[in-house]
Amino acid sequence: MANQAHCSALEQVRRTLEPGRVYRRADLTAVSNAVDRHLQALVQAGDLKKLAQGLYYAPRKSVFGDLPPDDDELVRGFLQDDDFLLFSPSAYNTVGLGTTQLYNRTVVYNRKRHGQFRLGNREFDFRVKPRFPHMLSTEFLFVDLLNNVDELAEDVSAVWARAESKAKQLNSDGLSQALRAYGNLATRKRLEGACRAAA
Image (cartoon, rainbow, N blue to C red; front, side, top):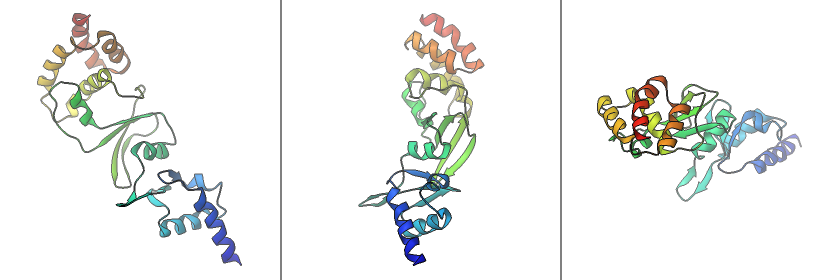
């Protein structure tokens, strides 16, 4: 009888799972009267997969097997927050400063966590920032590339030379706003002259 009650309680938890969603242990305490036992059973059955300590996801099924959650959903579950910007430094290559490196990492600007975290089989570089947009723009990527140029596998002096010329071609209001909002001191000082020339 107790086993039957456990099965129906487990089934009740299983029915609340949505494929593609990330769950913290705490999320399931509302629907489970034995959360650790249920988590163990759901992981064994393949209904949940473990991402990190206390963090799980319900896989989406496809003809190729189980699919992991989207990066946005994964990071949202990890941070317990919607306030972040997620991107690959490879996006810098779209700005037109001659950068060509491809980066196999994902940067997450946020207000809570700092450091490298492995979630499932993915590596994320979490960086606490006081200000960041919620969508990428050319102006933001331009400024952020220059903020981080010393970390990139690029010729720094060549990138700066192109940046001072490229700044004159960008939307001067948009660039000035991005520079004020997101530029570090070195980037702001160096580009202010180029922005004035573009105005």
